[in-house]
Length: 414
Image (cartoon, rainbow, N blue to C red; front, side, top):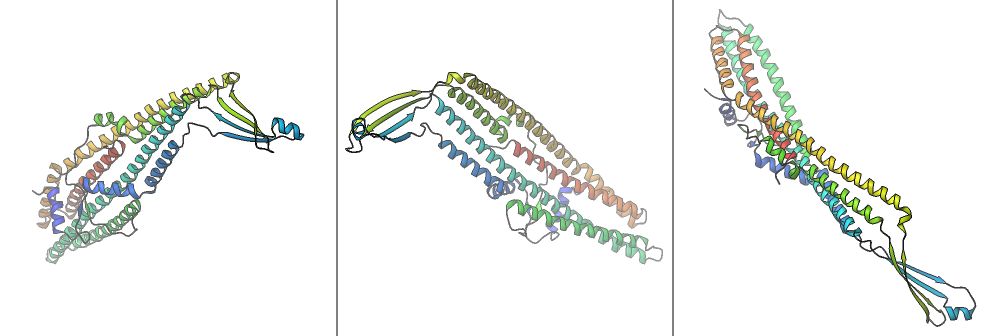
């Protein structure tokens, strides 16, 4: 007895049911191509790259030395006094770096840069995942159209049989009229499915940044569900693989650097200055003074301590935020792995014994109807049951692929 997988393969070979051109299997290679294309072209991914580049520029912009100060002054007095003391004053002052301040500021900006890189990677992953999910929806639409086309062809043959049976003097035209009505309804459903397929294709083109009416070949879902990763193993990979968690860990590192910056700010600021006096009449230097200035931060010690305490609190909050995000991602990973496992199990069940029994029941009922031992209602019910099982098997495979795509986004392979 023919299984659903052989049945679908036969439809594809008999072919011509969907679109011109060869169909493409929606395998890992094609999904990887679509993810890569979306990651290159999607505006969110491009914006993420620019933000990461801006953070890299900011990291290089951290200064060890503050800008020096230069001053000039002029004296207004009698010529003798100006000649003796000098009437032009030129000053230069340079603040010295506070110990550890540059290293802390650089560490903060480097952490921010790494966080933006992770955010950029997350944007690219999301763009690729959106494209992959669009392709899965398109493939499911193509599989549905294939099954509906086969259903229409079967009903067309049944209509002819019903007409022949009605031509018999002992026959009735009721079954033929009803089958023609059912056939018209199925044809309308098939036309609607084809229009929906065009919509899915346009949505995928929008995601990929392609022209709206770019044609797509018929896509085929895998015949059998692929393996499902172990949920516990995927959860263990979250701290190292998930870009959101990695980004928040970098933000926690930036918060730690903020604490060190606040601690360094309470140190006295020291500046070295040089002042020179010269006489404008001859250009001779009359005197030179070298001095040191130091700030007195102890008067605002309570303010500095408050800033340090605030920075420490933000650092602790950032560490807790990392754990919160890890737990949220762990819940999503667990749900996605469970959905993938359930969909795979149902897909295998619908392609095995369930399908075989429904297929046998449909053939038996059809033979019984031809020999007038079964009603048309029984024939239609058995046919619809078989169609629903075939469609559900394809839908379960698509659901599993979507769940695996969610897993790929949450814990990508690096």
